[in-house]
Image 1 (cartoon, rainbow, N blue to C red):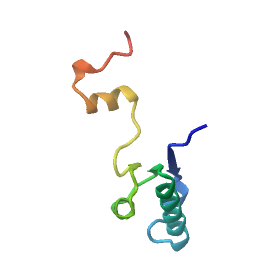
Image 2 (cartoon, rainbow, N blue to C red):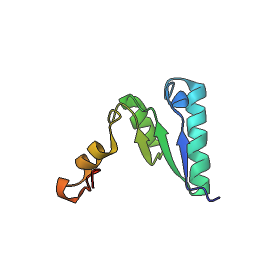
Image 3 (cartoon, rainbow, N blue to C red):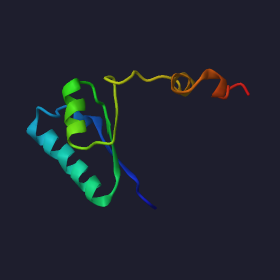
Image 4 (cartoon, one colour):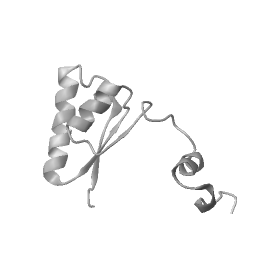
Length: 91
């Protein structure tokens, strides 16, 4: 099974960048992914310092309350593209 992406669990992001152990694990995941040519998604990003740390260390994508609250997919799609190009769930 091919592998394209790694996800950094929220439990490691909770202490990053302030906790040296969590930060070391996040840096390790980012390094391994980079060396293997994989994309990385960090989940549970809740602070600007976490976001800045991840950008600085080459993280490809982030998700968490800093960026947006959970929402239904249709609502998210409506924020991404014009309403006329989003198929309705009733169709």
